[in-house]
Image (cartoon, rainbow, N blue to C red; front, side, top):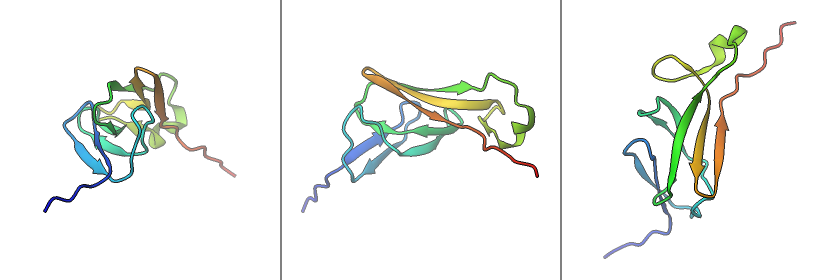
Length: 104
């Protein structure tokens, strides 16, 4: 007996991860599924299988200052500002912003 599941295969364009999600995701719509990508060294989005795209990390380019303890770092210790997924019909961006601190 064969069971057919309605869903989508999600993949990472930078590593060999493949996973199955039971909720349908339309190509180009993006997902809220992230994983710790060993190729990028940070959290990266998964995309529906067959989506032509690239996922890139962007280093933080401004002064770290007091944010140093709250930054997202890659495997080399560099602070990462965002991960951008670029597709043929647009792009998505996940921003790793440190939280504001208030000293009273």
